[in-house]
Length: 190
Ligand code: 5GP
Image 1: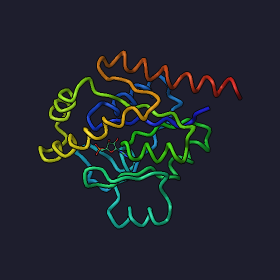
Image 2 (image 1 turned 180 degrees about the vertical axis):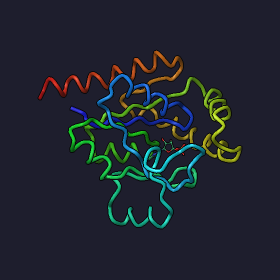
Image 3 (image 1 turned 90 degrees about the horizontal axis):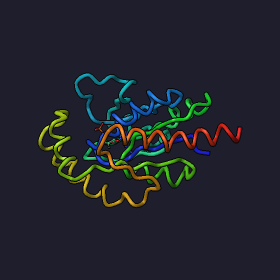
Image 4 (image 1 turned 90 degrees about the vertical axis):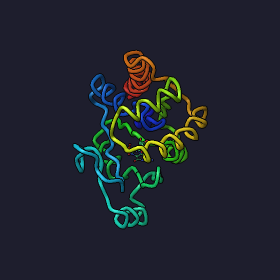
């Protein structure tokens, strides 16, 4: 049964909020803190939100094979550190990854038992509005992210589970249902 859960989908679709709510309901789920070369946003902390690495360090760690997946997204690098994932799994905890589509594909290859959920926005316009009102990115970054989102949305059918993030409460329930079914199955097998 799955112990690794991948939440993917375009930037601004609400993956972070959904994962926060999921973990409030299922507190045994651990979040894997990713590494990135993008600079921290206001209020973000090294080791809590991301491991913020410079380009050289990220490249070095790619060379060392430290990542289970990594990708370039809108001009920056992002990746899941093997030690981060192994630490949680080694402690017997299920883990959730919040990653973009290229990384999710890599995980599908290397960990086919992982459960992947693609979060779909109600419409492209809603996604655009969310990115604009979130206020975390400038106009250029938003334009770039929306461009990537179009391609990401085209790949949604590759994923076993797709949930439309329209009504937040309903979407949280759906996500909790998917994860809980796997965790209950794993408990029943143990
Ligand atoms: P942001 O810069 O908004 O924090 O993240 C940009 C995109 O990178 C989001 O779609 C986010 O889910 C994704 N991302 C975050 N961490 C990782 C990671 O470790 N690997 C991959 N492949 N994507 C990630």
